[in-house]
Image 1 (cartoon, rainbow, N blue to C red):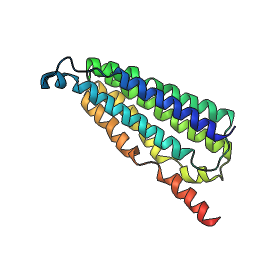
Image 2: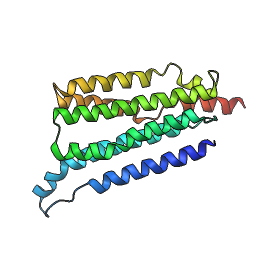
Image 3: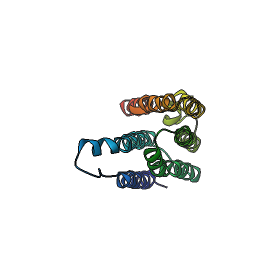
Image 4: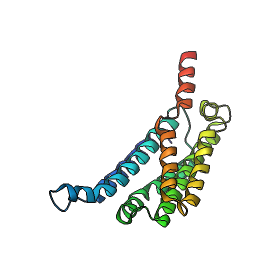
Length: 196
């Protein structure tokens, strides 16, 4: 399969996810500052989730940036990632509605963990499909960034029961860690283009 179809499908699903999230946003009940203040938690959780989806979209693009083959296992791994990302809108809406309760923050952190694991697996499946000497394999290496993110999300789940805000801080910290796309892949691709 051409990786362009995989990218186009993934882009479409991520666009629908963002659309669903924005449709979940509540409008203020009135024209006062107080009315606006009442919806700020909803806007804040939407913003965090929008950035979360945007980070995955951006890094997914970089992951597929190099020349590569796409196997059936890669397709399923990609669907696995999209499944977890598709759960962002309802969990975001739930969190916005009831606030940063320990159970809800733990569920949000669990969602982050599963999406992080799915992204890690997608990377492994792409390496497997393209071989250990592929440019992607060289770029990803041992994937310390992916592994540390998964560990941080697991820590955020446990911490949600003690301090939901500290758990959220970890989630935001991991997002900031991934905010800049994975440059390892760009550097490897640029090196190959210079050598060619």
